[in-house]
Length: 62
Image (cartoon, rainbow, N blue to C red; front, side, top):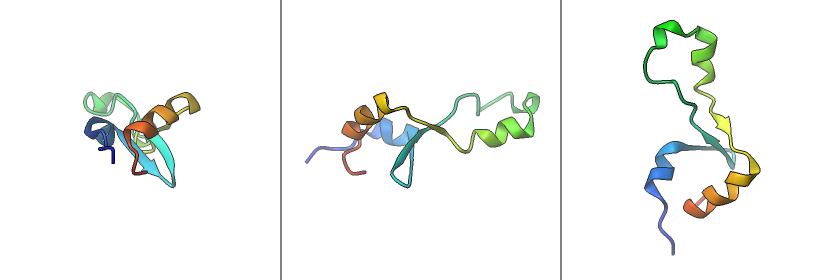
């Protein structure tokens, strides 16, 4: 049995068997950003198909 990659586990969001990466620019200088822009950070960016297979190898228990 393969262990899960703990660094990947912290950086990836899994919703309904789809894999999302967290967006950048979420931590500081938020006063300058619009509310719409800040809300878009919560959704995450879906991974493209080239990276999905690589992430699934790092997280075998999905």
